[in-house]
Amino acid sequence: MEIWKEEKYRNLQGTYPVISLSFANVKTDTFEKTKTRICQILTDLYIKLDFLKESTSFTQKDREYFDRICEGMPETDATIALHKLCDYMQRYYGKKPIVLLDEYDTPMQEAYVHGFWDELVTFTRNLFNATFKTNPYLERAIMTGITRVSKESIFSDLNNIKVVSTTSDEYAEAFGFTEEEVFAGMDEQGLTKKMR
Image (cartoon, rainbow, N blue to C red; front, side):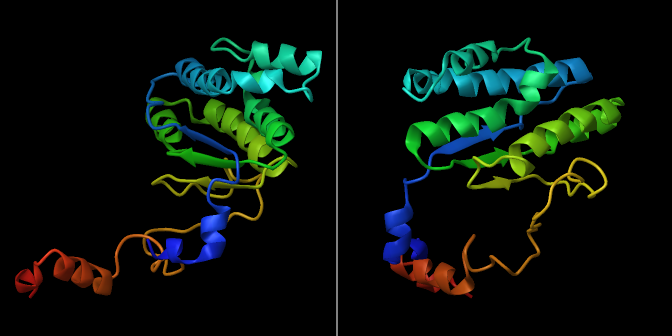
């Protein structure tokens, strides 16, 4: 909670629109099922943000595209859906959104195990390119996962990627607890005697 002590971060909190999604439960055994599951996740996002269609900045074509997002949408709509959603949110809020994608690699692991790697890499590369590289409506993005995929696969179209692993020192003071914080917390709870 140290970050909350700095006024600039308190003032920043809650000022950006956020698109948050997770591929954690995209655990299927075929490409078609995986694509359908990702389309369901995208559709759920659009359903939650249906109020965006009421914006005066929306055209009839925007509304038509928005309404095409569904479980059975064409791959071309699915791979551009997050890009378009960033555009819609930026117009509605007047600020570019942040995209948080958790467990981006779960479908990739399943594709590798079940033999549809090449199909999924093509789909994912197109989705990531449209969302994270060629997207002028994106403020920034964070993708989390446990598998580091080589630059030759789904990340080959992306630039400015910064890989931060659990062994990186860069954010060691920002996430988790330092030894000093653990001891201070134990002391605060009257557990000092349990320290070694």
